[in-house]
Amino acid sequence: MPVRSSNILISAAAFVLLIAGMQAAATLLVPFLLAAFIAIICLPMLSWLTARHIPAGLAVFIITLVIVLIGLLLAAFVGSSLSDISQNLPLYQQRLKLLTAESLHWLSAMGINISSQSMLEALDPSAAMGMAGKLLSGLGNALANTFLIVLTVIFLLIEATAIPHKWAVMGEDAPSAHSFKAFVDSVSSYFSIKTWISLATGVFITIWLAVIGVDYPLLWGLVAFLFNFVPNIGSIIAAVPAVLLALVQLGGGDALLAGLGYVIANVVMGNVIEPKFMGRGVGLSTLVVFLSLVFWGWILGPVGMLLSVPLTMIVKLGLESKPETQWLAILLGPDVSPNKMTSA
Image 1 (cartoon, rainbow, N blue to C red):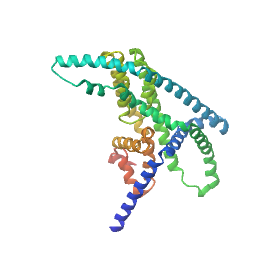
Image 2: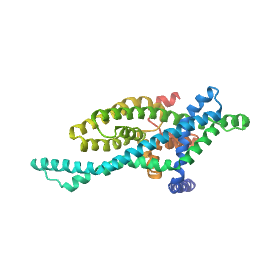
Image 3: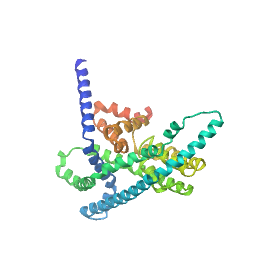
Image 4: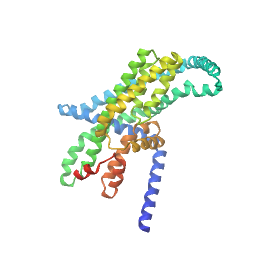
């Protein structure tokens, strides 16, 4: 019993040191994690190109060119949109003061007295839009090391093309590739499903807000696309600045319509389409997904929120590889009926 207790204490101490080290090295760790997951996303495209007898070097060059072009377009678009918002922010604040005065007058007529200062603080457009800008700025800070990220992606893709040959050369001495293949397949499946669902959500939000007449619909569609990768609360955070802008710019009726668009997108995508496909893509329970969002966001910042599910999947797959820790992997996974376990 004392031996087991000492092992638990040693494991707990090692875990604390590991987390502290990761948090201290977050500025260096985040770009490499982004590069690793970008490379994993690009693996299906790399396989598709090489299967059509395109040389591996040329395939990597094509993928790298696509990544750089997409990054430059997004950086230019987001930078110009955020610059316009910062210039128009005083106008939005002035309109918000007028709307607040009208609301307070109506509430006082109903016998409800609320401080104007507290209401202005609650409906501060700069603070609300900062919620969306925090993730964009965090992602932008990580992408500031663009050269390092792109270079790492190139080397990872080149190494991915060489791994099968190395395994063949090692022969019987080669380690089992089952865990690595399971990880790559799980992460690729998750990102492919989530990317298409997020893209559909962003397109729908862009069209919906453009029809209503809200400013910067493309920006809010991009925000909805990115925040849809953040489990559970991402869609709610993405809706706040756009709905508040609709309230300040167009009025209460159009703000309700804007909010209705987000509700429709979340109900259809989050409760109908995503559970239908994501059950095969992510083997994690809902509680673990939410806790991983908080945990990795605390360690790595906004980028950690985006990568929370894949990072937790790495931990789960590592636990599955050892018999003594498989029970932890089962606890991290979704609900499994006894019939499925016995049949498996």
